Image 1 (cartoon, rainbow, N blue to C red):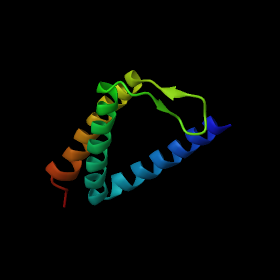
Image 2 (cartoon, one colour):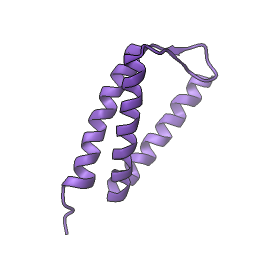
Image 3 (cartoon, rainbow, N blue to C red):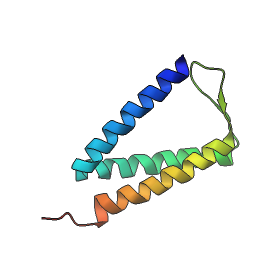
Length: 91
């Protein structure tokens, strides 16, 4: 049951973030910073080989998963960096 709640919360947060990022350049700038920090932390967990337990479950995220997530977050950082800072808005 807890996994279903995690998935539902993740979907709601993702849809909300995409909605605000599509409409607001300042939010894309914020997301660029957030993705940069999270990619760094996830990469550190990968390099240090730290397993992270998922709160409220018996699941444990292995370091390889953290490494894959760090790559995805870094790509999202680059996308938000481009659309938030580099590309000029259309007038």
